Amino acid sequence: MLFFPLFSCYDVKKNKDTEEMGDTMKHIRKIREEYATPFYLYEGKIISEQASILKETFPDFDLLFSVKANPFPPVLRKIASLGIGADAASAKEVELALEAGMAPENIFYSCPAPTKEDIARIFGKCQFIADSFHALSLFEAEAAKRGCIAKAGLRLHPNFTMDGKPQGPSKFGIDEALVLDNPACLQEYPHLSVNGLHIHIRSQVLNTAQLGQYYKNVLELALRMQHILGVPLEYINFGGGVGYAYDKTKQSPLDMKILHDTVTSAAKAYASQLSARLLLESGRFLTCRCGTYVTEIVDIKRSHGKTYYVVKNGSNGFFKPVLQQLFLSHLPENIGITYEPFLTEHDDYNITVLSESKETETVDIAGHLCTGADVLAKDITLPKASIGDLVTFCNAGSYAYSLAPILFASQPAPQQIFLDEE
Ligand SMILES: Cc1ncc(COP(=O)(O)O)c(C=O)c1O
Image 1: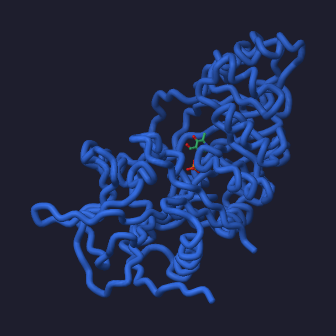
Image 2: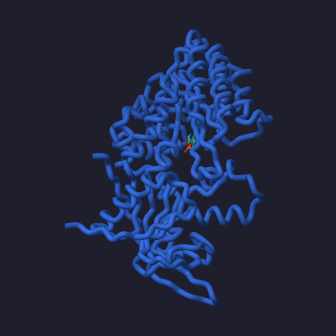
Image 3: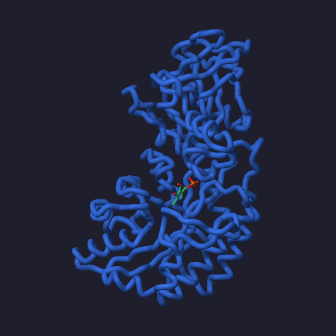
């Protein structure tokens, strides 16, 4: 008979649904019997739940998963099985998406500055989106070399912003005026046929009205672009933006019903003029909730009155707390959005210690790297823990493993474990 000890879990910020947390903790205890720490646990059931919410909110759209958020192959296979395509930011991400079973017509490659080699590698394996005139030239040269006319989308840097403030410069995309005020510029690419529009100006938007207005602005721009092209656009990629309320005590989630109604009626209003496929990119909304990072206390040190719980692979397993401390101690408040995904404005994970003790203790949680910056929490009060107890971080399914400096000090990297729904 399997025996699972009853740990007292301490959820520092108490913003994760207790029942869900209970399921995750059950899985973690089971996994720990077979696997060494540290590990990332990804739950397929949660990906399905998040995908259903997006599909219900955006019934007229095809979804694309931003692979950069979590390129773990079983996660990608799960996403492919839900009929979701890929937003790929590198040639490797295109290959991962193909290996996961996604079809080339559902893989959209949009890299801020692809090289000639990248283009040769992805050609014919996905839909290409050019982020600059130089990228168009590279794609043109590859098409000419292969003696074909290739389709290319354009990522434009639009004049509108998410919050209605004046637009500024950007390293992403081509300024809309450079194309719309001078359509002749596209004639320089005789081996290309421009077939799609891509816009992405911001991640992690939690203002429903702003996001709704953004989708209308994209549709309006698409119509203008179609007009100068003189042929129907094949797709309009609205990019990302759908935010996730990580800390529901501080953030209100998007109102998906209002978003659904706004987007659906906007899509209907343009349907007679735009027959394009509508695409929506999402990384964090699809996967952040599905992941938990699990590590273990390997030492407890006391120095000048402070207690340190030292864990295996602290920041070289889960980097977000360190990034947060670095950014917030050196930059003014409310700058988070600009620094996504390195920094999310609000605390975007919970720390839980699985300890059998009823006593509490105020401690720092530090990692085992040779840097004083390797601290995951400062002065937090937790159930008194012992060496060998587990420490978990939730909301670790996106921008977590892929952001951690796992090569530092040549410590073994955390394992990744995917648990699909039965
Ligand atoms: C072009 C583009 N699309 C989509 C996303 C995904 O954003 P999120 O994970 O917030 O959904 C990103 C994130 O960096 C992005 O750069």
